[in-house]
Length: 260
Image (cartoon, rainbow, N blue to C red; front, side):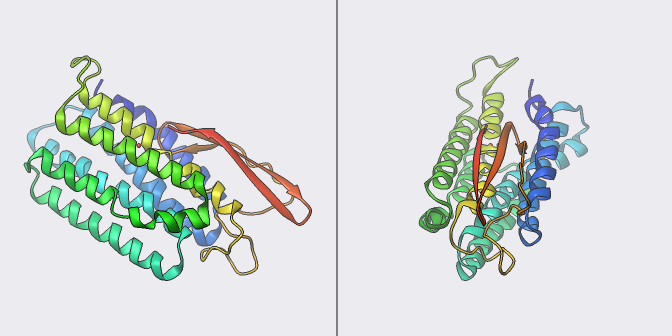
């Protein structure tokens, strides 16, 4: 069953990414598209690598791409979240996570036989590198965004520990430790998306990515909108609803989320 979880989630990731970018303001669409693209690359590459039968050369290439995409999705997840911090600190955050991702990708490409524990620690170090930005995320995005980031991070961390220890391994033939790892990461993959779009629209401050004179956040405003069905990258679905109140609107988001 290895790889089929990611293969099944790829079309949902693609559809969710398209909807997310379509709902994004022009200035924020680039940040949202980075997350969507990195999620599609992670799930698609993993599905191809694990489900196919490949020769030694092709398998080596796909394995490198599969492992490198873990660094890519980490940086891709932080990119839309960087909208929540002031411009100066945003540049530092993006430089930190993308610099770390570039170093991690080079590490996995050139040392594919590195010890499992070593590259697992590298994955976790990059994933938690921006923990000091949580107060800034909270000030702009609110407690819900922080909760989603922390829960997603804990799911990723649990998955990484399972991958490193190869335990638990409930059914090696059908659903072993690797499938547990994939399931946990799929669950974590979509959690940040519940914060990327809705919480920007609930802030009272001005987002640096919002055009001048318009409310903060990623989603476009419109006359009497009813925004529906945002599929998160991975195994989730988010429903967005806006009710106009005078000149301002209040965006409510509900949904379930289900990270690699």
